[in-house]
Image (cartoon, rainbow, N blue to C red; front, side, top):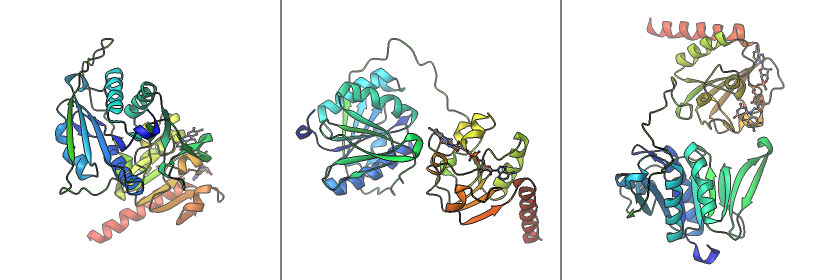
Amino acid sequence: MTKNEAKGIWVFAEQRNGTLDKTALELLGKATELKEENGETVTAILAGHGVETLADTLIAHGADRVIVAESKALENYSARPYQKVISSMAEKYAPSIFIFPATALGRDLAPRVMCSLGTGLTADAVDLGFDEEGAFVQTTPAFGGSLLAHIAIPELRPQMVTVRAHVFDAPEPDPARKGEVIVENVEAEVDPDYEVLETRERVVSDVAIHEAEVLVAVGRGVKQESDLEMFRTLAQLIGGELACSRPLVDEGWLDHSLQIGQSGTTVKPKFILNVGISGSVQYMVGMQKSGTVATINTYAGAELFDISKYGVVADYTPLIPAIIDEIKARKANKKG
Ligand code: FAD
């Protein structure tokens, strides 16, 4: 569709089993900021079966309008039916900007919708805004995160983008907000090539690191897998969670859900302790919005020291057990 035909900011509101993904609210927060600049209304597009009740939450978080694509065939996510329905909704209502979360689902769906609509898509953005001429600009890390690219889609519409999870804050809900809800009973067919027999919640042993207020993050400097136990103990003692840089995931010591960074999770804890992590661009892009940063590293030139409020140049092996003993002793003194 052409520039003149398209208007409005759309957010794809991801839901699974009737529960909204947090990204839906984060993206609505950003969309509301964009609206303040270009004056266009914010629409959340929701697809599923019996999910209309989620519309109130989306409106409370900034949507002016919610379009619900309703069909039994959309109950579970499946690429081709979702592609058809979301593309036909976009063709019908002609948004100018269409924002998806860079979740597994969003990364699968957005390029398919882009192909159907014959437009452009920027992947994995970390910021959105407008330039001096009012062009919509998507900022995305390039060349392994060492550069930030500012991308615009000048002619084609909608201007599509996937945005990394947890880079924007979800706004506080305003239950008094009013908005329009349009339920589209769409004709969709379940993909005939495969059948979803069952969906199961992925079980990971730790709390999601992007929600943690305190993190103990460990990296390649950790000598052996058994040392992770002392870091778990430390994290527990200070009311936090264990997280890591990529080498420990590559090593198979920790789950990918615990990885901070460009190809992992973006975190914003109030306090983060980094141990045995040098501070590559790809790591720091995922934790640079943290509150207080502390670092333990044997190498005084480690980049993480540049953004740390507290730093100790030391080998963690004797230091961590000593810190654990000290915390335990202080806790015991408090009780006594
Ligand atoms: P290193 O850089 O090897 O640092 C280890 C540190 O431990 C050193 O500074 C060393 O001085 C210190 N040390 C050693 N022994 C001790 C000790 N006894 N006590 C205290 N300190 C000690 N990386 C990520 O983390 N997250 C990502 O999401 C990510 N995505 C990537 C995406 C792409 C496209 C690419 C190309 C790379 C990505 N990487 C990512 C990898 C990244 O480039 C780095 O290789 C990685 O972050 C390095 O991890 P590290 O700091 O733990 O290891």
